[in-house]
Amino acid sequence: MLEDKFGRRFHYLRLSITDVCNFSCTYCLPDGYACDSDRDFLSLPEITTLVNSFAKLGTSKIRLTGGEPSLRKDLPQIIEQCAKTPGIDHVAMTSNGYKLDKCVDEWVAAGLDSINISIDSLDPRMFASITGHDKLESILGGIDKALTLGLKVKVNAVLMRQYNEAEFGGFLKWIKHMPISLRLIELMQTGDNVSFFNENHVSGEPLKQQLLQQGWGQIIRDKAAGPAQEFYHPEYAGNIGLIMPYSKDFCSTCNRLRIAATGKLHLCLFADQGLDIRPFLQNNDEMGLQRELVNLLGNKEATHWLQDGYTGATKHLAMLGG
Image (cartoon, rainbow, N blue to C red):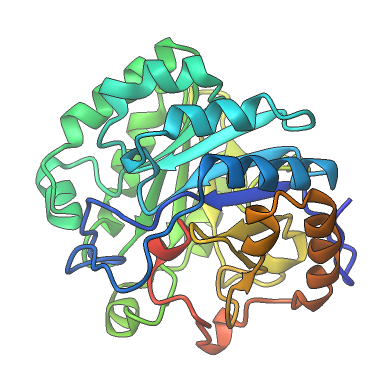
């Protein structure tokens, strides 16, 4: 089992398979994707070595991220490889939903268990303003299709004062009859968005208190769950998760590591740098990689230091898929 010096165990791997994204979200890539480094992304054989090694060290959940992971033509093969790896019992993906309605059948057939779709507004005009794409209707249709296929669906919405803060009530009405998990995420400061962050950050704590006052109860976290504080209500088909990275002790329950699309291990989303493990992948050296992972984990910090305005090497969230 991968365990750090603070006793945190790592069951959950977030694997970026590309940093390319076709959306231009205001809080992440407002000017669109820019190719500013090597695009030599991990190959399927390298991903196989990586996933096998993590699984043998106790990882049970893989989340495929981007950029936008559906831009990789071999995505179904990557999903299938992860799903058939002994020890991996859950394969998830985070996507902007651009290809959801057309491709979700193929992803489920390959072994995908759950998907997180980014929808920062339920108003079509606001959605287009945030993302640069008038795709809300087709994405919502894709979610309906995914639910029909038995896929577990979560919807991510980044809270922003000047864009969607007033939509909280609308989101609540939506999940009254939608069996999904809505994730409301505090905007995080990155290297490229300091001014935007200062103008738009909204704390999730008042929303938490509002939910508790309205009869929502908190759900106990699973060992491989993400960072959200989850809430349920007996009168709602869906539930709500709040991701509040600026809250006290947020990092104490960290259970996930990140691999960038070019083969670097990031011990934290906001680490100083990625740690190159690609030589092990290129040589199919699972034993060597496992030893290196155990060694490198000794350098994981207790916290991300976001509360002090520190963003590390993370210029924007598309670099590692959040």
